[in-house]
Length: 105
Image (cartoon, rainbow, N blue to C red; front, side, top):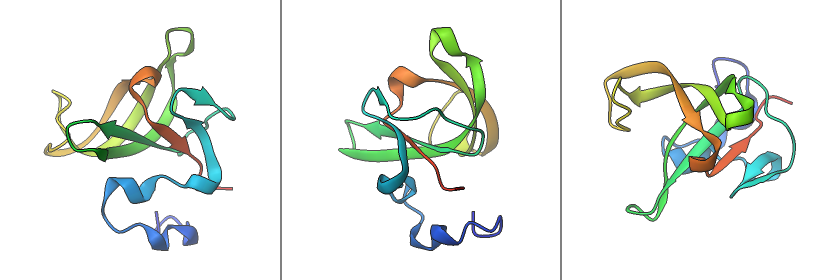
């Protein structure tokens, strides 16, 4: 994000939870506050970890009526593991998403 010119990203520390921008939430715990755009950042919460454990970029709707969106995310694989081997474009469910926030304003 810093290489892309997002100066507000200085607070990101490598942990997925630091990617949630609380002052710019679009979606939080099942509730829409505003519509997402490509490059908005989503976070997934893992009960087993007790925290946000994965993040990526919203990349448009796969099927808006079904609540699925395309994502671009690192540290994943074809099977969807959050400890993966590369950067992939995937399909995610809004229902499984903890938050989506905007970094580019």
